[in-house]
Length: 189
Length: 189
Image (tube, helix red, strand yellow):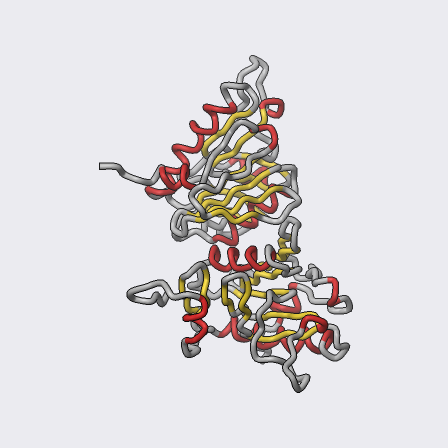
């Protein structure tokens, strides 16, 4: 955790700082650096975005982004994968995708790293759900477990390989199983 | 984790084993030993039961038990605190409290230990909610954070000290705040 040595920064002061790698998040006045991505985290994140986009982006119903800074309700977070429905994509004056995303993603996906605080990640997902996010996924590669957090409902546990994960309503047509996701980790000789 | 060396035990074979300390749980055919309780865990667990019972047991509406083995739906778990409504208390032929609890508690409370898998504890709570438990609490002393899991609903995050934690319906009259719970950790000179 990187904490300003002398004073608590405002959100505006935090956003004016240079980006770091791994990215820092601003949560309740604290600056918290994300863990250094490791093999399993990086592999799942790398496969998730193109897999989701191959269904939703081609249909122009949504867009999945890796490590996108999203600033809303006093926090600035960088979900491992942030998915926005097409209608909510911010565009600049040229009609291009904007640089600044000042809204909660419609779908937030977090992939646990071995040394990462599960509590902090859970809090991040719950905060997003309370500010408009429709669905959260928490993927734990070590435990081969995925928790889906549909807004307003009880979380759903998934570990059977043929378990079909729930997706936000605007992503209908996208079907992913637990086996699909952890299958990406397999190195076939 | 303690795993049978040669074969997977059935639930009946597991239940026939001698109890260990810390207790072992039987989950999906695996035998998983609970972490050795440490200071913060032990303190919160020790205060929770009498505090809850001072409201619900005296009114004969419910009973909170520390480390009670509950066996249901193919699993045998030992929640840090298990609360049963009065009507669901198992009794023996003398009208005394029974030794065997073959049902899901109405309220399950888990207190995270530093080395404990948050994912395993979350799975335990979700499994109980899917088998009749009305409310789960997950207390993280290190992060001073409590997640409440009302059955069928989105989990609720609590960290403000004056946040009043939701309790199951049969426990009306019981009021506990985040500050009450983490206040128990304070050693006043």
